Image (cartoon, rainbow, N blue to C red; front, side, top):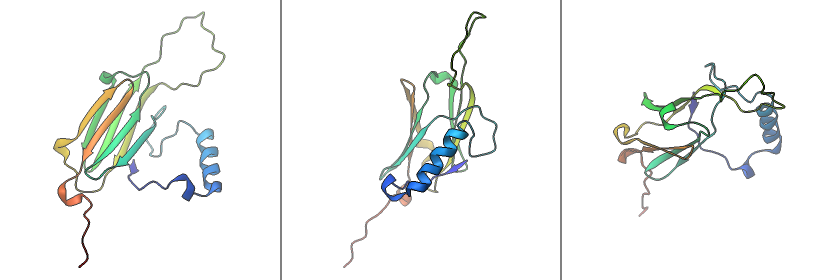
Length: 145
């Protein structure tokens, strides 16, 4: 499970840490951060707007019927399955890099989410989830007198 934290732009991250993350990402590409057994994990972007969070997940080769989105205990969970294409005995692969099977990604959001207003749209292999904030959780500018 991943907790939502603000993203540091690349200019603010050390080159050493970026190299280290790239090294471990290449060495262990299909390991998830939680201990759930997964074959692969889709790449996800999470953006914070004034009134909502926008979650965008790349799910190439998956249909919307193979994807499920749920929100419980401040946690958004995206699960699904990419099914392997059938092959014949005559098929001989020179290289196989694409991963197949079940996946699950979970993200914990801060308090103040309008759970009844969460929407999900699937378009051309990309999942878009809108997670609206309550009025109390929206940032507020206070004028200094």
